[in-house]
Image 1 (cartoon, rainbow, N blue to C red):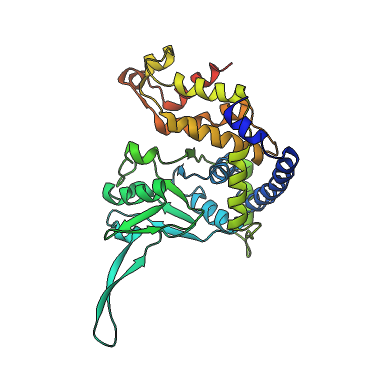
Image 2 (cartoon, rainbow, N blue to C red):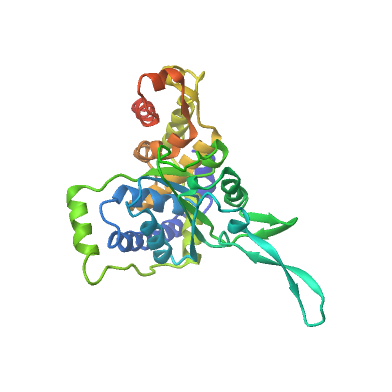
Length: 336
């Protein structure tokens, strides 16, 4: 058994199963509520909810008009979170994100500084078009996403719990965008690609959103309940076979570690944070799908969103017209 499995074995198995079954029911209701509003993006909804259940941040990448903003707004409502949205623009300043100090004067004439909190003080922050802001402003989110607090004028200000950043990003080939630095990309638990909907899904979108009324989601859980489920996710036992698959996959994506695919096509690969992200997300995905334990299929399903933003191709791979997703798929096939 793994260390995680041994830790979970000390808990009352019956109580753990009962708690997991209650979580399954709550997650199923949240999934259904989101599905009534967001059409044709089932995999996107799955990966986004999985990231939140795992307690992390997610980066949604796609062209404008694919309901990325609407998805985040809907998730905030369904999960009962205090949600805020920031539209990132080239002239956005770091103080516009974290807040700033202003000077107050009382009736005696005494002056003092007062901290005015920025929009980052929310349980669900939507950073819309994050790659349109300058690198300086992008880095303002870095401390908050990693350490869950901000520091202004030497004073520490803790962020509310839970705290999640769901950022949207336009493709880099569009004008007026700045590539996210590798350190900030690594802070995102996963990168979720948002594609165009199918014909039938787009037909449903047309019929549902161009009439007199439009379906709206309601809250199905509270922030406190979400935190309980997130704590449960980290207590779920993980079989040795799944742990071995995670380690094998992540290490095979690093050049110089015995993988011919990595040696031939990868310039630099994912670090241990990728393994940690996979370990947490496979549990969350299992709960999302109504299972009490993760499997190797969860590792295969999550390989692309977890790894693709944590690795870079070398010149030879780019010259051959290969993409990161192609390499990840080849590595996944190596799992058997």
